[in-house]
Image: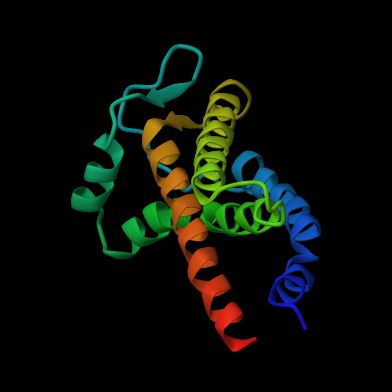
Length: 160
């Protein structure tokens, strides 16, 4: 059996999984309980934002009451976009005309854009904190998903 055909069979459910993942993602970021923290005064309209890169990461990392809070908040933001990076990489690699660099740039740029979209909508519609650090952490999660896909695909190719 051709190695590429074996990999394509492995990728078949990726589109359905990505669709399901996006549904769960939107539920989590718009309807689930807010585990974030606000470090600025809340505006008159009840909204809050942080546009200073790494500020909330620093504050959560160093001023949390326990070591569990940074793991949940920071690790959760990274983990939240891991499936996006993994599944989108899988889908994009099905097209043989895309280079690794193109796939990498598409995954990271769309992850960053999706995260910005979420943060802006959280600010306007859910009164949650719109945070640039969430964009950084979410994009990092997509990057890790991309890297794990690359490693996993090499392992699968070697075994076939």
